[in-house]
Length: 189
Image (cartoon, rainbow, N blue to C red; front, side, top):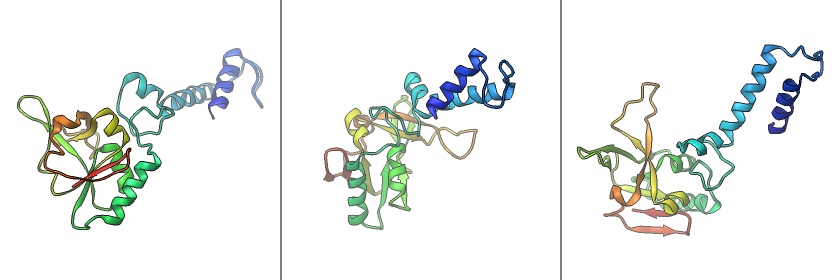
């Protein structure tokens, strides 16, 4: 698709003929389609998100960008938890790892946070109860979580806005014990 949209854009720019269209008579619709495909490519390969340093939930070509792309070890950690968890306890993860866990658990929850009076992002204790906390490769490597902000309303629907928070600064793991680790996934209870 990438090469096709580049070839199409190049032919339109040079005024070369496309199949079924005479030279120089490319329609506005065809030009708009080429522009759409180029923008679509930039967003879908993660280029725009990496340049703007924005969180996103698309797969990217760069494995260092935090996204919903999981390693085999991360999937193995989720699978282990699926087989050995107590069904009465909820499973919590940050916004990107939550998508992985949603494939295993019906009762999984995203970790939520809010700003205190001092402006520090803290875990929202209303939403975080007893249960398991799943951390993936990017959480461990960058020491941060993509936390859903429970104190911000999103005017565009039911999804809430999220931001990155320092894992240690949240105090999320202080009263929890490590129960599983495979190098790229850790589980706490």
